[in-house]
Amino acid sequence: VDQFKGITVAMYSCYDEKGEVSTEAAKKLARHYASIGVNGLYVGGSSGEGMLQSVEERKQTLEAVMEEVGREMTIIAHVGAPSTRDSVELSKHAEQVGAHAISAVPSIYYRLSPQSVKHHWQQMIDSTSLPFIIYHIPQTTGFQLSKALLTKMAAQDKVIGVKISAESTFELQQFKAAGGEDFLVFNGPDEQYLAGRSIGADGGIGGTYGVMPELFMKIEKCYVEGKMEEARSWQFIVNDLIAELLAFPSLYGACKAILKLRGLDTGEARLPFLPVPEADMGRLESINKKIITY
Ligand code: HMN
Picture (spheres, helix red, strand yellow):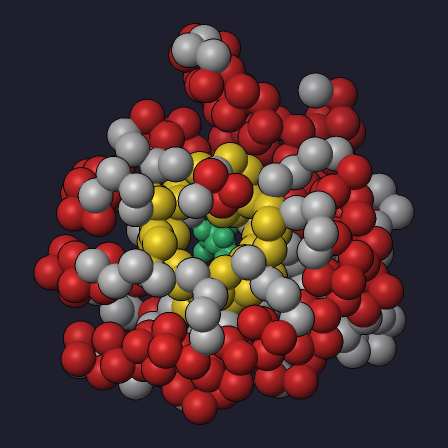
């Protein structure tokens, strides 16, 4: 499980100027992260707009990433889709192309019983030999994962961890305790990276890491070396940047626009996510300058 620890960038979607999936852009972005020593990539999750893409587009994106960096980085494929059928198809595909793990949210839109969600996940788990990481993000899915269900899931060898994007560090600690020593917990809220790590997270998966991976790697390094004061000051710097990014009409749109300023053109976020308004470009440029100076 050690290969999953540390900083995993939740990769942003990669499109061309027409808004179609661009394997070229995906490869370039993945290569960029590999070149600066990022440990892993989470492909097709929230930041990756997996839920706004067709099964075919999601496969293309994952294939491009695997081809480019699959031998150097740990790749987690988010395969969650509203239907179990699509999720299973994506799971099998992830295994075929060599992803290191699969991960999934509960099915979205319908209010589902815990039994349905368990069955949904189970179909994916049983369809491959890959490790499975639960993706808990109740603020978007509406599904409150209970400690009882988490414990049941974690009892299976293949279920190696949970990515927690909920903002409660109490829940994070409780899930870690319920899963046991070897059960991995990934911190989701980037603004709480250090808090999550301090209370039991083994690492993190986050979207804003994508525009400032070096800063998150600094927090991680300081934490591991026991330099808590320094770790905290980096987290505070990161949090001011995140607060500024959250003020845009869409966080993903803003982060993708920052990448573009650096020559990493991933196209615009797909609607309904809004692009950065022209009038806000100056503000975006100044955020980018700030990040670059650290
Ligand atoms: C993903 O699946 O793309 C992300 O890892 C999810 C991640 O937890 C992000 N949460 C959401 O987008 C809802 C965070 O990185 C988030 O963007 C960040 O903490 C800013 O609030």
